[in-house]
Amino acid sequence: MKQARKNVKEAKNNTAEETVVETKAERLLRLYRERQSGPTQFFGEAPPLDADTLWRGLTRGGEVRVLVVRATATVREAAARLECSPDVAQLLGELMVSTLLVRSTLNPEERMQVAFKHDGAVGQLLVDAWDEGGVRALARNPGVTLEADGLLLGAGLCEVTRSRHSGKRAYRSAVRLDGEGVDAAMMRYLLESEQILSLLRLHVKADANGVTQAQGFLVQLMPDGTRDNLVSMIQNLEALPPLGQGMTPGDPDARVWTSDLLKGFAWDQCAREPVMFQCRCSEDRILSMIATLPKAEIRDLAHGDELLETVCDYCRTRYLLRPSQVAALLDDPS
Ligand SMILES: [Zn+2]
Image (cartoon, rainbow, N blue to C red; front, side, top):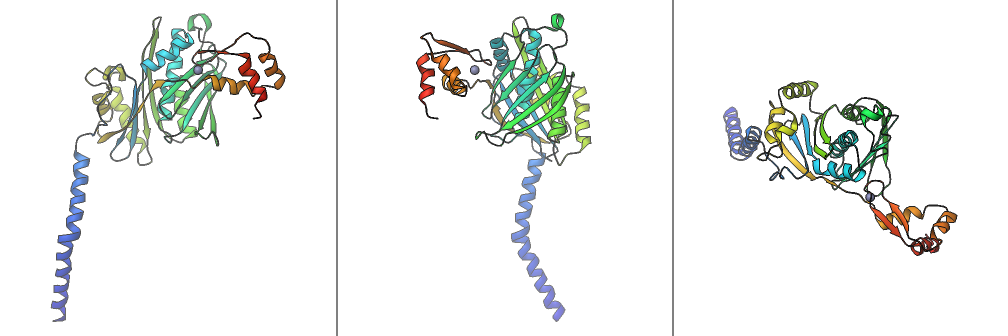
């Protein structure tokens, strides 16, 4: 009797679980399986081939993250403003493309500056990328060429500075440069400073008419991934044409190409950010820079009545300041 009562009680419990708990669990499981086996989800419509863009994707198991960027118009504008030789345009373009990709893996509101300080012919290279997608670049000797001046990129340091809007708590780290390419230097930075195993490929081409192509992609091993995941992706890559060929008028995001790269993984495209040339110089910023000079120098600049000409190093915008504007800095108690 006692046993029978217990059986009844258990049966009751099971029935309750089947109708309430299990149904809910089944539903969740069904949704999960549908998502796992369903087609790749894309993030809206892809911008056309002549528009610059950067998008991120993630495998459903969380093994790897992929980022793809097209920055042709952006790099072309930066190189044209600096009057870069085709050789320098290519090098600076590679640094711009990789900075855009790496910045996009950071906290969304972080800005990033990458400086290549080395003994090669091109001199210091500097790229700033901001959280809203803007990027600008600077080369100390933009006109040099490989043929006339020899090795453009030498040995030295790759310095990366990450900061937030507040300007406080900037984080700087450096890895060595030993004359290898931009991609190798940036992968070393990601491994040594961010402890992320990555695969970075850059495709930048420039000729006498300017930059004709600037694309790149970054694959990163996430904490849930294994080294084998990255190895299988490198094997997939061997059978693929360059990324630029995967970007077509009908598929400007190179979604098919990326699916081939990620063959063996279920994945989704999950975010997109704008890419554009952008310099943040302004008359106010130039004035606040002058304000940091010693008072005697400011007094000298404010003297006379000729306009003072200043040119922004990054975008080559010319600013003409009236001496009275500079003189006003001396009155400003701040
Ligand atoms: Zn500027």
